[in-house]
Image (cartoon, each protein chain N blue to C red):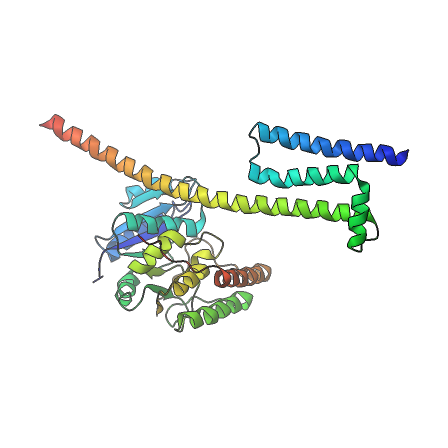
Length: 239
Length: 128
């Protein structure tokens, strides 16, 4: 069982078709846990559907991106006395049955990544997108002093130290919620670990295999990584 | 004669820049921290317009053969700095708006909950 209280945060942008099923699935896998849907400025009925499905819903007035939605989730967790936060995407890509083992791993770490390329599951990537993932994994593994294979996974559990840090400094830029967040965490002295998780296909759309888009991704990822390292070290404000 | 009219044109342009900037400042349409570059540009243009010799002297000092190139260089530099400052201000504004949006969302949820609580309290009071 988890140490302390855990909040499940589901960032959702126009997911009225899938959000209800994901909320139900999380409710079955983790009975009694609070599910917070952060409605990231959706223009459809995501918020009302999620509320009707029994989730706590907080709505942003306009779209801030996954990073912005997650920072609000971390703030909510701090304000309401939750110790841990687990991010689960509202598109059904993450399996909530994996959450208890991620929470258990939080006793050895501040951030636990549910990694896709670590043995289980059928998720794969090719070409420049794969090179980008390998490069990111190598660089971030070095600064985290542990072997990480999947640094762009959204499936993450954060312990109390990381929640306090992320409530203030979770980045909203492109790729900030994955790469930069991990760099900010390791540079602030957080311990990052990964555990293998099976990842299911996204219910809406497939990852792009367009080589130009993948090359642009590689470039932007490298830039995000560089700026994450040359930026100032973020720490939590002394209270 | 041509040089006199072109000099007059330069001076009038510089005065116009300064008048516009000062008017914006006076009406509080421009904050002093943003106006400083425009004031600097206007003053430099005015000095250059009144004393073209200074521009020629500064150009020769820097090894620039055609003095007008110094004028272009300084103009572009000032525009570049102003643009950079605006972009950086925009980023700051975006961050502040983001924080406000987050706080607004948290407060809205609290109000919604308090209202639901108040309504349920009222119902139980009425039933008793």
